[in-house]
Image (cartoon, rainbow, N blue to C red; front, side, top):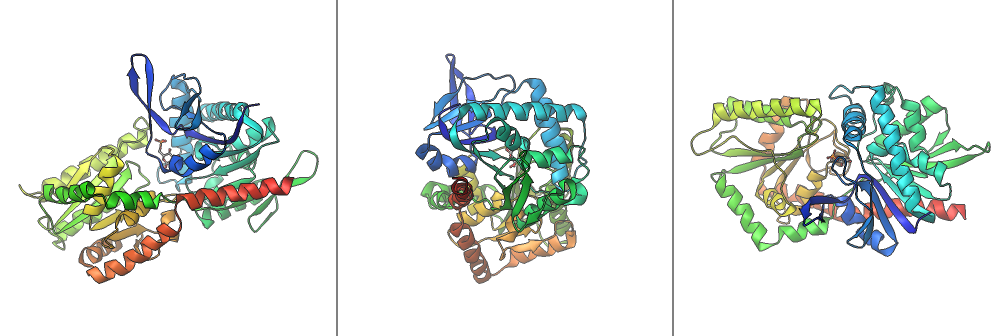
Length: 471
Ligand code: G6P
């Protein structure tokens, strides 16, 4: 039994190690929005964060960072290969994103997933005070809620699923489909991005486990022959909107946006894509559409440049290696065919940038292209909108991204329909300022009215209701 009243359990700790200086560990906060959202809760309660420090074979003792207790869970090189690259990112990730890439089902990976999930559950159980609240994050840790409940029935347990939950017809491919559902149902509250994800989950539970579901409630049988109620519902995640608004008004960032446009040769319009280099993001689809528009002469390279930031991700998983080759070949072909000495069709950056530079890019972009084939939420769409304090710019948004449920005045596209994507790009490029303003104002209101602190407080309020109903 530990001392923390509130614990977050996530695959990654909210810090990165930036090398060692004279034997001392150097940690800096990693950019994710989750930690910003949870920081106030962490400080108020006696908070701890359980997670992997991000490098294989790195064993670190628990330490204090920025007012929270960090509890590192070590992963060996083999754990990284089987649990993280294998089961998490080569089985669950493609399966849950509608098999855009083929999931691989390997028993050895599953065994590692069980083993590593248990290690996370044990670390959380050791850190938690009597009756503490534990909030488990994402698909890498789906078995933790149940393991934790078995170790510590006194805890209130939440789980949030950041990625889609697939339709039953796909989910049922998973050889361990029952164990995963039972793992998740160890939580008192199971949160999803979209209403559709929560209903896919409830349907899988009915079909596989034959449990009763009613509205958002699921009756989970208990060992004593009774039942407890688990809540499965949508809590769409958001961003720290005020932080983006603040950055977008900083004079140096505004100046940087102008500098970016200038360095691109001052095109009339800048199109922007910002993604982890992932096959779910539809990067090739958007490049294909853009290349055809140049080919057809509907757009000219002197007038329009596309900037694509593709940050490196999961670089040892085969599907990602293959995708990178495909994208880089596509960029090379399009640029080779259309570039002039002064203008480039696609400025491609396989790099990650600090938040300040991202906001400058958002301000420099007339059109933001979010063409995901499947995406839990897509926070880039929300970041772009929040940054546009000038109420200009057009968001082109895939209906397969969770953000489409909220961002109704974006230009909605089906990324598989290349003609439709082309038309939307042309419409965005030609959109009059007044229409941009109308749409952007309404998008901005959505994001400001529901930011990441609303998301976390709504989820934690649902967990609090569980606590109250128990006492
Ligand atoms: C998605 C997942 C997160 C994950 C992130 C980066 O947003 O939902 O759980 O942390 O991608 O991926 P990585 O594999 O680098 O942690």
